[in-house]
Amino acid sequence: MRIIAQAHEPKSLAADLLVVPVFKGAKRLSGPAAALDKASGGLLSDLMVQEKFEGKEGKHATLRTMGRLAATKVLLLGAGDKPLSEMTARKLAARSTVLARQAHAKKVAFVLPDGLGAPLPDIAEAVTEGAILGDYRFLKYKDEQMKEHAEKAIDEFAVAVAGKKDVAAAEKGIRQGEICSRATILARGLVNEPASEMTPERLVHFAQAIAKANPKRISIKVHDEKALRDMKAGGILAVAKGSDEPPYLVHLTYKPAKKARKKVAIVGKGITFDSGGLSLKPSESMEDMKIDMAGCAAMLGVMSALPELAPDVEVHGISGICENMPSGKATRPGDIVRTMKGKTIEILNTDAEGRVTLADTLHYAEKLGVDAIVDMATLTGACMVALGQEVAGVMSNDRKLVKRILDAAASEGELMWELPLVEEYRGLMKAHQADLKNISGTRYGGAITAGLFLEEFIDKTPWAHIDLAGPAWAEKDTVPHQPRGATGFGVRTMLEFIQKL
Image (tube, rainbow, N blue to C red; front, side, top):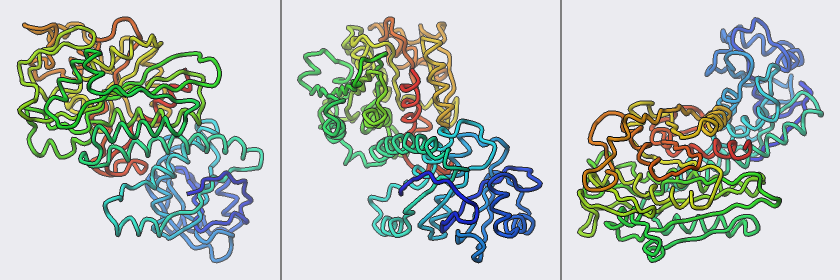
């Protein structure tokens, strides 16, 4: 799908489908919609009356223009309350692509209304993200549906702005939206793949491909099993023991063309399949455990976009990548492992494995001397119990850092909520025979105690932990730009965060 910015004259805006957002409660059309209505001889107003269309978000109405406009059809989309927010713009654009496919439209024009709730480049970026992400489907293993999806592909999606002076501003937003959407789709594709295909080695190959595609800006180090032993990465090695697949620690580095203002590390949990180990999950809880590398996938999506976005920030993308499987070689409940930092962990439940690998990767990241560390992990079911399936929990040792992340998430329409690192709970992670245990032993506050566990491997660096266990995977079509399956959650927030540092 080609996304363009286009200045429009109401009568001459050619498209198979002309999308016109209408705000809720409007007694009459205004701005570009009013101009289109006048040019059509009142067709849009008549449609609103006939369909009792009131602009409620999620509602739509369609008409054929019968040659009164250059467009073949007009789609009125309920935009909800004025002004148009970035989140609503994303939803409307995504809904547009779905309805355009149903109408077999090859060329779509999305008319930006008057009353924007954000600068034009930001709205254009949101519209672009909605159009591209709403059009995404993972159909690699469904041949007939993939063929049908290709046949109904939209060739062009135009962001129609009021005049030529606005085209450059819209184009800036479109470019940003395209880059961020491609990065999100890369992460979605990695997570959607079956675990038999997305093995640790294959995931490493994807990381290497990102570096190979951008050799001037991105370098990579891959630490294999022998190197991990030399590094005394006991956490990663302990989780990987039960699998036939060897573990890795991947370290990508993006360096800007000019001197970096800041230096940050993005750490992603990279468990390509989580059976629970010897603390085996029930079968129904294991079905979607290919998603346990969603944090790593998000990190790779971020790294893939940085050369194009070109922020003047040095970024390190790090992940400990392995499988958590049961076998005669697997780590047993009661085993004690020594991490890269030297702290020991008593493994009381092998299904609390992500925090054990993150213990090593967080320490590795801190040794780089970065200004901030952000980890993304599908870490706890407890976070889903607390916040539901669409909201990520954020915990941090630094007020400024967590605010930057939450601001970036709000801008990108990714739902996050801060959870406290309650000092009184820290003792729950202390072990009898080791420095720490990997579960608290209580059914309460599991997301927070996991965050406190991770904080034990951070000394002084500002750090934030994003538990994306819920929103990494959509069980159903929740919002139009996040269809069922992997969501690529966290990619756009981290890109916004990095660019605004």
